[in-house]
Structures are given as structure tokens and as C-alpha cells.
Image (cartoon, rainbow, N blue to C red; front, side, top):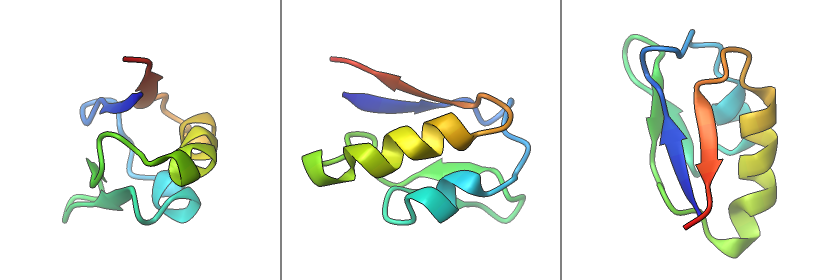
Length: 64
């Protein structure tokens, strides 16, 4: 499983960082940065929560 982030769709709400700070960050423009494209097994729950909370739908989980 890996994370896809559409930075053009991102509105900089920061919900992803709040939900999974080890996986997501924001750049100087507050747009999403994916720190780990392939989350570990213990991070999957947090990442699913972050994807669900993204107000712009900029985040997706893709099964490999």
C-alpha cells in the first residue's frame, strides 16, 4: 500500500499532519508533503484516518 497526494488539490487544512505526523508534513505554502509513501503496518490506521479527514480529497491509499 502506498500514499498518493495531489498537491494541486490540497487546500492546506493540515488534518493529515494532525492525524499522522510521522507520515505527513506541510511545506512553506501549507501544502501536503508525504514523508513516507509506504506506511508501516502500525501506521496504516492513522493514515486511513488522515485520508478520510482530508477535506479536499487530495490523499489516496493505493494497494500495491
